[in-house]
Length: 122
Image (cartoon, rainbow, N blue to C red; front, side, top):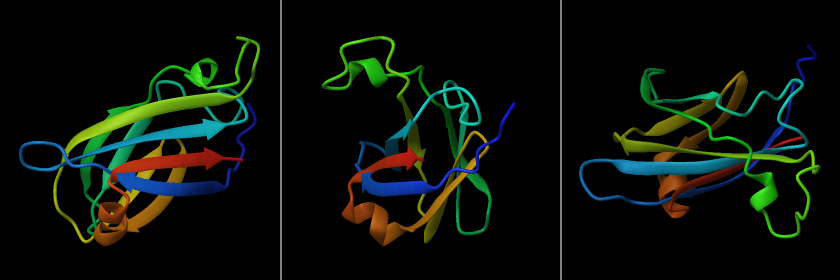
């Protein structure tokens, strides 16, 4: 199986939830779900500034056919979603989805974007 080293192009947004920590939600888009991308039902890890795992989730099934303009199930575009509840405070956050290392964000960057992350693998 081909393992594509993908470039993560991202926009970040984060949204507050009730209770202790923030809820981090996000989506990942790629040209396809298979091949080297392996995005459906992938493990999601969130690490703090010390490198400790502070949150985890699993991505959804492919949501690409739900996007505006997609009229066919034959569209190879892949879009998966995830949510991590009760994210504790940290100065920096690092995201990893499946085998794809993601970007690192400061707490300020995430707060400015309302705790929602949109990533694109190309």
